[in-house]
Image 1 (cartoon, rainbow, N blue to C red):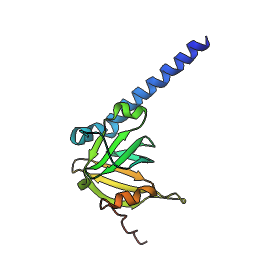
Image 2: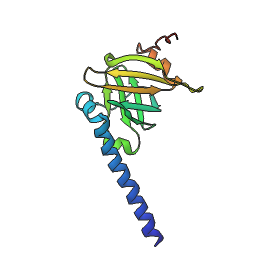
Image 3: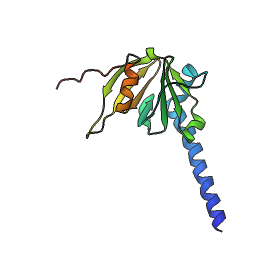
Length: 147
């Protein structure tokens, strides 16, 4: 009985991961970016786990399941864990970068990089550790707006 229950739990978890991955891939627009920016080689460069990433719409963000690689070729993105099963790696060219702004609050440092390829947008939220690597590619923090 215990084995059957454990097996049923595993099947349920895998089913949720599969369905959730397929649903979020279509709804959030990863597939559309994949058609335009699919990585053709393994991603290289320093990598950072993104606390938050939105693709196409801010209403369906990915939380802590996307890793960004910063290289001369651009920003490589891939899913971590089960999200990697349904999200093929992307390589966004640096020309898509539209600005880095401080989005931190309550003492937590977070920085959002907006990417826009002329067809769609995505936002990548980095932690402070990524700022030097981003600066090496010409992406610097925008001045804060005065109130």
